[in-house]
Length: 394
Image 1 (tube, rainbow, N blue to C red):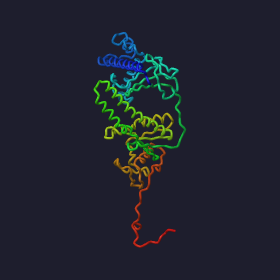
Image 2 (cartoon, rainbow, N blue to C red; image 1 turned 30 degrees about the vertical axis):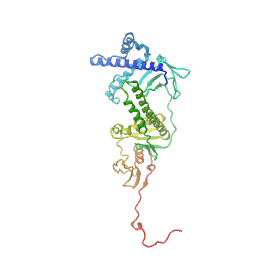
Image 3 (cartoon, helix red, strand yellow; image 1 turned 135 degrees about the vertical axis):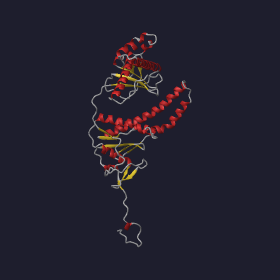
Image 4 (tube, rainbow, N blue to C red; image 1 turned 90 degrees about the vertical axis):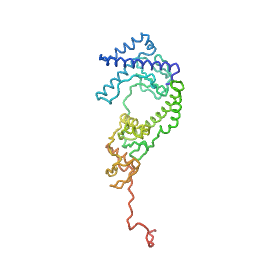
């Protein structure tokens, strides 16, 4: 979205009012909890913090924005509490209790439902209540009439519109034969069981010089000044370019792998554990978790099989040729020879084949690009003969 100066001011007002209502509702519920009173219902909070608050001098400016935005802010608080309590009950991963929103947060969002009477104009602009017709660059055609639109402002000062639409049944891709195991790493982003090695783009590492320069300029600005705010936006935009490039790479690669293979298997890596090591920056730069999530939902969408094996599977210790476990090896060993069958194995390709086998996929070990170790010549054939031997050339 590309709002004008006046529309940016109106959006900032909507962001601020939604934040105030959210914080007021959170404060009311926390006060009731501390005093042992019943938990305030959303309907009562809406009447007291929105409808009645508009008639007071302290909150009269709430009437300058759409009431739907304020009501959706209360719904967001309900969702935050529900997620918190579900985490305590074990229904979902545990998360912290709802917290107050700060006016200094660099990411803001508001939501308009159908009740707000927003629309898309014939000129393909987004008409929002009490904001106006905002120019939009459409990334795709909407498959159906949207019911809800969320307006998001990110840390880089960019505005986005996100729509909720109804879609038809997912497109199921035609059946195909290949099944694939993927070994994720740092030297190569991904090594496939068919021997393909995909280089790691290292988006953050390549942008470090530019990021360092922008961050140094930010640190020299006086806190609270306009110059510091502009410098902060420059830093945020530099990081946004890195994140966008990484996301685009993940999308392209995951779509290609899902389209070309009937089944895909990956290892469940402990990203949080690896992020506490000296490899933390490289681990975050690779973005394995986001890539695996894309593979998972795209496999479900297009009728493919996705398997995630346990992180303790010894994929780097087992020979994909004979299945003998040869023990752990240090990271600098990239190629090793099986003591049982004598096969020379590429560490990463061998691990990718073992990932596929552990997932129950029909992957042949012959695809691991193995070769036999050189066999020493017999003693009788070693060295040079003391006397000339007859030539066998014809």
